Image (tube, rainbow, N blue to C red):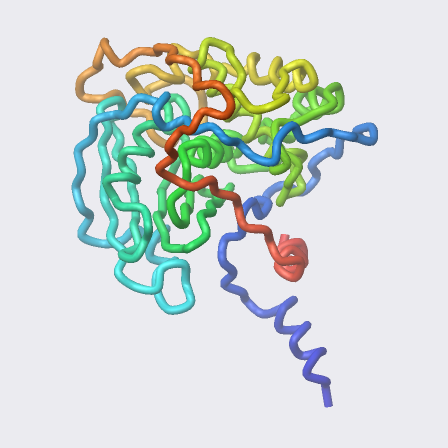
Length: 329
């Protein structure tokens, strides 16, 4: 007679599974990716986390809302007992002034973040980046956290997440916009060489990685810093000891990406030439006043600044689920 432990292992390995989408689980069409050998890295995190808030620096976008009569599949599969939303989820189509294609936001009834807040924050994600986002799910949790489905571009936000987290997750949708690890910029030889040439990363979370791609979290966190620099006339966040020279190659790499052309990133239309955009239709009216502007520098360190949301982090994947995902790929 087979032992219970053997039967459990057989069920894990061979039965059809319906797994939750784990933060940064690798897309399945990535076999044969060439590994790039890096020297032993001793990257020093410059901070334990970001202490700035981008919300005030990013201009809002006016919007028109229309509640959907039914939930999209990408939302409905997370509704029900034992799921991310136990009951009562609504879906809203949001058309922003800078894009003709509507965005879908699904909100769980008990989520800490109000729909108006979610609409406002999604609209503050620069249009040149926002266009890569698919569906946004707003969910309940006492601990603020977030993750992105790298295959679909859907973003799941739990609790009340700060604006830098919205930017961070949006960057993942851009990085994996073509649907495979091999096409991700965070897997490119140029990015890996930039990392190998530097001695630090922005913060501790930059060294966290949940997929086989190299340093996607550092890519996302460095992108948040790049957005900050663009908005603040190339001034770094006023965090103690925060420097550019030890991560200069990573910053230089960011500067080569067309995404960070400030005119189009912070422009007035999602209709841009780069491939992989999920929203690309011209808005009904182009607002000539919606153009890139730098903002005032943040106050000095030690100045009390009110923040209306919490920093978020992507959940870690339990080791057994990592094993299952690796077997299934």
